[in-house]
Image (cartoon, rainbow, N blue to C red; front, side, top):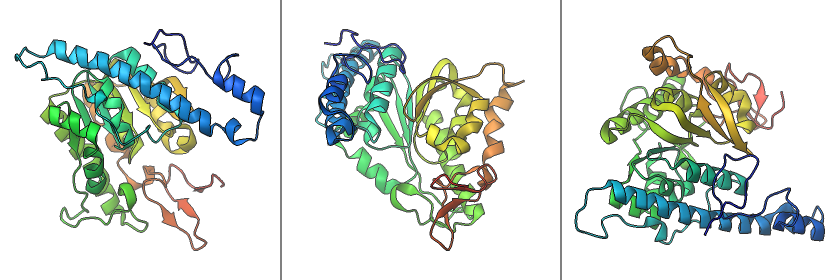
Length: 338
C-alpha cells in the first residue's frame, strides 16, 4: 500500500502513502497553486489540508496494522485468534489530531519509521485516537482534567486500546497546596487567573511528578521510545522525561517554535533532529550530567511559578490583555509584543 514514494525534507525517512508536498512539481499542492494562485480558499489549504489528513490517516491505518502484528508476535499464544484486536479498524469519531496536516504527517511518518514499542502521550485529545496505534507495546496517557480524560477515553478507538490493556490513562484530580481542595480548572484543565503560587506549584507537582511516577511504576516502563508532550507544564515534562529516554528515543514537543521564549531551556538538554511547523522532534544530549541522580532531578530546578508560561497560568491586566509575569518570560504579552 505504501511504497515510500514521498520523503518530506522536514521528516525523518519513513514509508508514506503521501506522494505530494509543498514543493514538488506535479503534486496536488503544486497543481492547486498553478490553478488557484494565492489568496483563495483553495490556496490557503482548507480542501487540500483535508486531503492531506486523509492520506495520513491511511498511513496510520497501515502502520498500525504492522504494529499490531509486532504486538501479536510478542504475546504468548493463548489459542484465541482475537486476543490482539486491530483497534485501527474501529471507526473513530475524530478525523485527525488537533494539529496542522504537516505536523500530523510528520509524527506519523516518524513513528512509522521508528516502530516504537513504548509510547507516552502527555496531554491527551484527538491525537490519542491515532498515535498510540503506532506503538507495538505499552502506551501511557497522562492528563490533568478528569472530565476531558473521560471524554477521550470513551472514544471508540481509544476505548478499544484501553480494553485491550495496551493503553493506560493517568488522570488525577488536581488539588491545591493543602492536598485537599480541588482547584477550579477551566476548559481542558487550564488553571484560572489569580491561582495562588503555592496552588500552581502543587498542581504542577501532581501533573509532572506524581502522575508520571505512578505511571512508570505500574506499567514497569523504564525507557520510552517516543514521547509526545502536548499538555500542561511542557518544559517541566520534557525535563522530567530525561532519565527515561535513551540515545535513540524521540521527544516530540508541540507548539515549540511559537512558544520558544518559554521552552528554549529545553535546548540546553536536547537537540533538534526534525520538525514540521511547530512540532519539533528532539533527542537528549549525551554527557550532560555528572551522575544519574543529577539527570533524574534536574527538572526540580524548574518546578516553580517563575518558569511557567501564560498558557499554563494566565493573568489578566486591567485592559484584558493576557500577560505572562514569569521570570523566564518577563514582559511578553500573549500577542508577542513586549
